[in-house]
Length: 156
Image 1 (cartoon, helix red, strand yellow):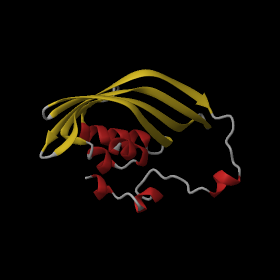
Image 2 (cartoon, rainbow, N blue to C red):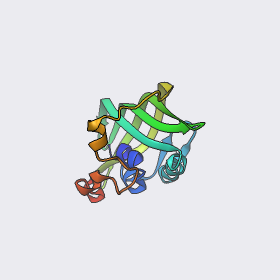
Image 3 (cartoon, helix red, strand yellow):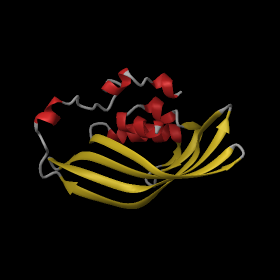
Image 4 (tube, rainbow, N blue to C red):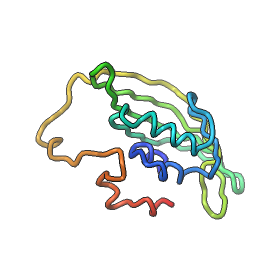
């Protein structure tokens, strides 16, 4: 969850708080240390992907001492601009993680992302009614209103 919130808010520190230092992340088009992966995500998303929302579910975990193997289903929705028009990309897949407990903290030591399916849709229209106009807009930074209640130190 820290990783997902970190990506959605483009918060490098929060993303990395889910990993042990030097953990490997295999996202297909990026394979390497989590620190470089976090930089890659921020560079790729900033200015290109207008918003991003990750959902996790259907988690299966097998513990073996201070190691745990976990499969988590993930749905990610990205809003982006292509040729001057809004599009939504929905990608569904799974995170296959090896978690390790080190110094009392369970974090990702190795991650493989499996793609099950995706789709790209043009945004034909948006609902701009009284309810949505009055909502606080989400931001992809620590300026997002959620940081007033949930501080990065809460997830260290």
